[in-house]
Length: 201
Length: 201
Image (cartoon, rainbow over all chains, first blue to last red):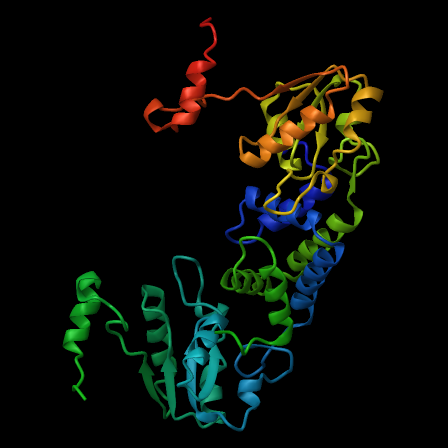
């Protein structure tokens, strides 16, 4: 419907359309919104996106995003260096930090092993994990990976990778979520949470 | 949940969050997507947004977006200069152009008169409309405005504004849409399309 867009607008719509979940109509709406606002808004947005990608770094220890060579979590003396939580994605760190119950460090894989999507262990930050476990004298590795086939595959791979390390490996507890109504829980989860029931305190 | 975001990321999320329909979680997802892509993608997107707002101009006749002082529609000798279609928004032009049935020029108001939202006629491109009708020898003004109270108010205002001009004023036909099932049409539309029935051809 918009073959008649001026080239500048067409270009902006095209670029916005590359973002996940942004269709052409939404892209056009966003672009026209920016046109209707102060020039400063578009400039600030554009520059922040350019700087974001150009200037951000990743922590050389845990691969978390960071503006310094070592991220604040790895650098903090407040955090327990002997506890290492392996996550797939940076967003998982944000979710775990929000719980305020974890005080160790992280290791971001940058994805999950997925034969279907052609993602092999070499695509992920896995090679440096055993060395990190040794040099940082990690006592426990927590696998905080999604409860999906790819998550399970990755967890299994890591458990094999670390089998020669003197480290205990744990995974997140699986079971019913806070607020869950029993009748709506899938039978696999409910079955597992019956089998793995815990003492009532 | 993301108080721990690095400042660069926080800034990008904040700016993306200013866009309509983009919540903080979506903004974070978009920013992390850009982080995971080639640097070129973020740079191209950022630059296109900056250029869009800085370099785009509006046609001095019809206020359509344009990269030239007079937009291609106003400049085209193929278009009928005596037919003028008044629309609220630039997107309406795109929608009308897509029908391929209109061959006149446009006049973009840049909104609708809305006492509720504090938008008065002086906020819109209305003052230059009578002069345009005269200098371009317009014979018919088509009010292609939304069928809403604000659209009706604006249409009424324009009809008064042009009452001294020697021009006929028309509005879009109202009635049932192509593919409409009678039982799902609101009674106002259905009633009006019965009253304003047209000869069967």
